[in-house]
Amino acid sequence: MKAKFMEMVKTMDMSFSYKPVLLKAMLKHVDENGRVLVEDMVNYFMEFYSVRKEKGLVVEKKQSIFCKDGYTEKDVERNIFANPFKRFEDMRFMSRCRDIEYVEFNRHVWKRLTMEEKAWIVGRCDEKLEEYYGKRLGKG
Image (cartoon, rainbow, N blue to C red):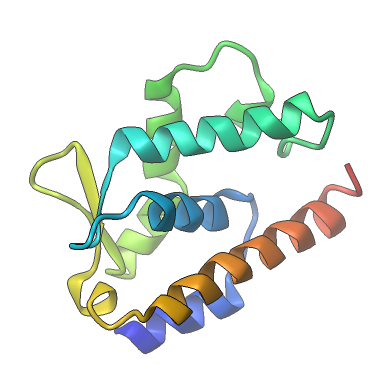
């Protein structure tokens, strides 16, 4: 399971920037049990895209909610669960906790991830974001 997860991170196909942003949000806010507060994840997404907007960088594709004004935390949450989270959940790498305020990494993946691997994942996400914004959307 962990090997499959690491391979998915390595190859990470993307039509939006959401997958690497999700992984970075989760790794930034995860507790020792692999759980992340949904609110922290939502706030990370909102901050990531608003910082890009403030800097005058390309935010996302035009149809993304992050390119529009007036979206709510609930809109962002719905977007996260519809887009990147569902893909990881379908592959059983993540799930929504019984306590719906939290999401979590699959425990078989989480328990086996070393600190070095977590750092590598964050670095890989940064590379994929750079590649995404460089190639797909043109230099912002």
